[in-house]
Length: 93
Image 1 (cartoon, one colour):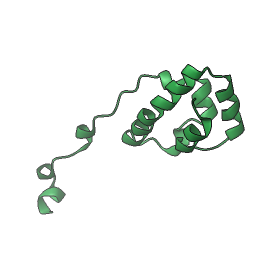
Image 2 (cartoon, rainbow, N blue to C red):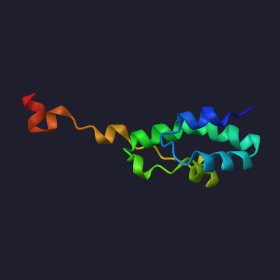
Image 3 (cartoon, rainbow, N blue to C red):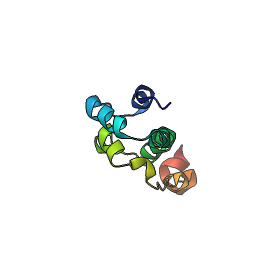
Image 4 (spheres, rainbow, N blue to C red):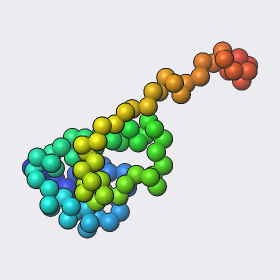
């Protein structure tokens, strides 16, 4: 059985818990399991893309919007890295 408390504890923005619990209660068991399974991917996406906490949806919005179904395109980490030899600071270091 999918557990709301475990899911909520992992969610990075813990506000309006009662609203999130109501949204959770309306979900099917299959949707709850899908939401639990996809949360780690969303956490990695928010971290990799540098999403400010302010722009992470509140839990009820994420659940009601079925955000676990979204296709996320992970940012290219390599594209953010600059070769040390391509900058003066890197060469001096």
